Length: 371
Image 1 (cartoon, rainbow, N blue to C red):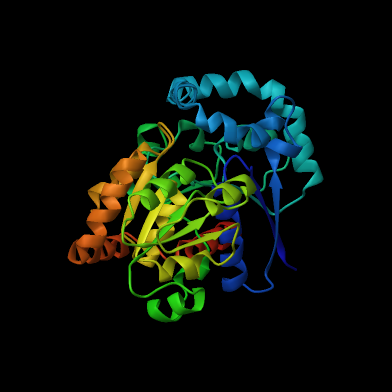
Image 2 (cartoon, rainbow, N blue to C red):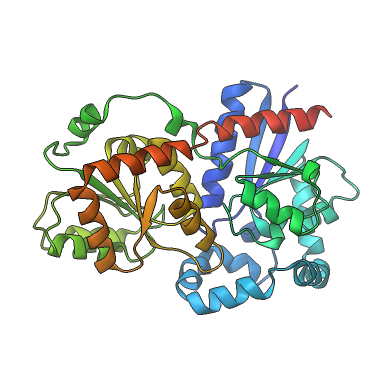
């Protein structure tokens, strides 16, 4: 009989859902027919007010960078995080117990930091394995590391060292990598063939500009700056689910070759066809770029949460930090004019890649269930 694994995520950004989907794909590829999987947005459907509104409010809150950083840092320590968890548990206990009762499973996997203290505590009468998969890359919040979890899977050595500093033992954690869709690791056509498939010119490098699944960040301003400067690239802009962004970018007074897309499931093919990747410093996007061997230009990061990602890419010599549109223009221009530097960064990107992380996490989960 198939074992059932419940994944807890929330749409506070697209990364948590994408990570859960990647692990689920890995499970079904490695163990066909052996696992039933389900996903629950625990904040939206199993949290009291005002927490249940977090997914809806997240895009606005993430733009309030000073407030975001203050909130992030004010709870980011062993004593402070424990105090917050202790104070909020009575408020969250009933909804957490209802989640567990209504979603019976043989294992629960969390890919969100806010589930890791309250859910295992609410599981005291239902002791199935609880595993945390940390989906922040380097500067990981204390909420990720609950001693109540049976195992904490982390993406980098830095994330593991952070857990040790917060009191977890090394054998309580496992470094595997950032879970991204196994499609990124698949062998597909050559870069030239993919460019022809997308209708992209082969005469100039292609710069792929993204803002995540929700089209967040200053994507329009960056696109306009590259266009106004007439950087010698073909610019492909992915606007995600942001229809307003799609309309605004499409209506720019374009002077350079360009392609504008909404939400797409073809990101592995787009990224393998591109030559330069312009992105917010989200852990999923960075990890996908590593697998595709793309030099990166990072234009934004969430304070605290993603600042370490920027340093990780820079230390690995896989990209450039360009925190405003004008700096992005200069960075992209430099990469276009220096193919050797671009090639060196592409190789560095590949050296940091963990293309099979989702499949490896599937094996770790399966082994944990067998214990």
